[in-house]
Amino acid sequence: MSTPINSQLTAQGVLIPLQAVQEWLEQGLEIVKDKEQIIIRPKPPLMADRVKVLQVLDEAGLLAPPEPLPPDFKPLSAQEKAALSHKLSAGRPLSDLILAERADRI
Image (cartoon, rainbow, N blue to C red):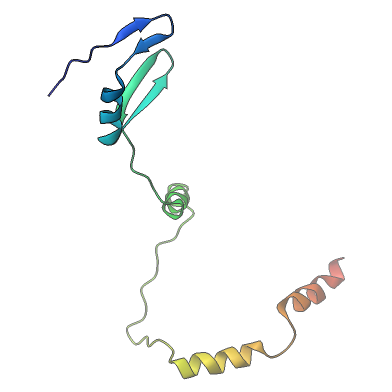
């Protein structure tokens, strides 16, 4: 369905009634200047940053498909997680281990 718009040509350019522009914006359209023309088009769907990053990485071939979990996989219980947390927190900080490993290269 088309609706004629009463626009005016002035020294500043083409004037389009504010009501028409507001209706376009409410309908999810955007107004874009492209070289010597004005384009009114649907707004592209907004993608979350994470989705954009994943899409770029996938298009570049840098993502591997996820591997399925083995059929006998069982998640750790809260007690097992606590025990592992305690065990892994013992010892020197990771930053100290990294510095010690790099010491011979400095």
